Length: 208
Image (cartoon, rainbow, N blue to C red; front, side, top):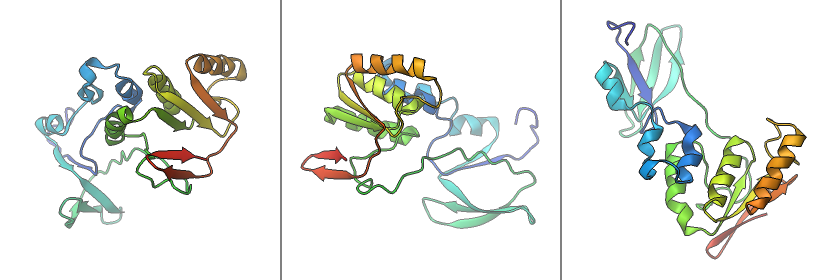
């Protein structure tokens, strides 16, 4: 918009927020941001883009792209109304979403994903009700969550199918140091193991 002030720019976003810095989720859940205010984890907003001149359509999902006719089909996720819009240039910035494995019990309300703002907000609200938190996956997100929750005195289990934490990013010499540091902070490392199922028992969920 700044470089092309005469352009007609429309933004379609299926979520109810934009520009969330997901790299800061662990800081938010670890209560390390000022006043626990997640607004600092957004670098823009629909209002800001609108003020710059963009036509921002939140809670709208693009369901089809026809490059031959240069049109897209858009669905309003609130009203379920659909429409076709034309474009001159199309820029796709769809981001990503986690792949949910078909593990029995994974659809339990006590199993959470951690990817976007709504996921983080739900975890922030629900974590105080728990004593033990189990994290599956020891990549960057899982590793940071384990640190954040162990620093708040939760009982933390960190599960990964590989024998080392953060194995994709560091060699064994370094990950051995990380493993000792986790254990020194009370994190129970369950490595070289895969989750077979989740089972709800009373007010708990058991990871098998």
